[in-house]
Length: 278
Figure 1: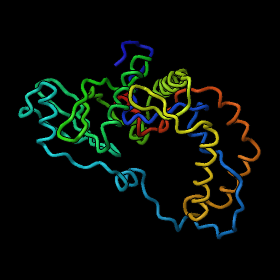
Figure 2: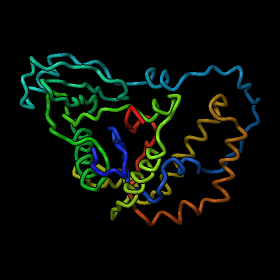
Figure 3: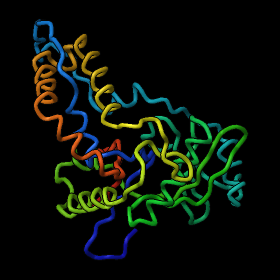
Figure 4: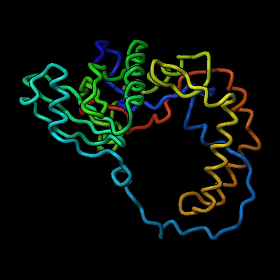
């Protein structure tokens, strides 16, 4: 937590999906693509479309699974705590990885068991440590280890709720929370690198793309093309408007490309932890 009285406690929760690219708003980047010939299709009646609440959409597609108690106890034993005395509680969220609150005596930590490989765990832990050194509010990394073939991280436990859940409450969050969100995002965007690409372990920037705007254009081309077959997700009219936007304002992407700054690729309310109270 932060001792300053002018800041509220707001933390970005893992996974931290970051890349270094040439525009400061990854969400806005998705508004750009290429022009497509659009086949006229009947516009679906919104009232006939099934509404799936966001929480159910997440749980339906989540890849994380429950972890055996012996794996969790071994992780805490490696961390230097008596594994047989630890109480574990599965926490909600976690699209790919399983998160457990581990309590022993008066100590509480987060045990994060990765469903992916050790490279992913190393990348995330290295990035969390780096961000903490840059005044970004993220959970502290206490240890990184292996239990069998499962990468595990022991992280600082941050007591709070997601901004998504806080927004759904009747009173809503304090205005200070929104100010802190902007401050955190600005802090991230002040971090620059010499190259463009996705971050790996030891903060090494990958060389997947020599020209990020070309990658971006190809990505949105595939996305809009796919969405032409899914009018239930995006109407042909809006698809065409996005294509026209690209045609008319693509320079907004290319003009910002020389600035290679850090961006969070999933900066949204479900990945921000805020206090439960005001």
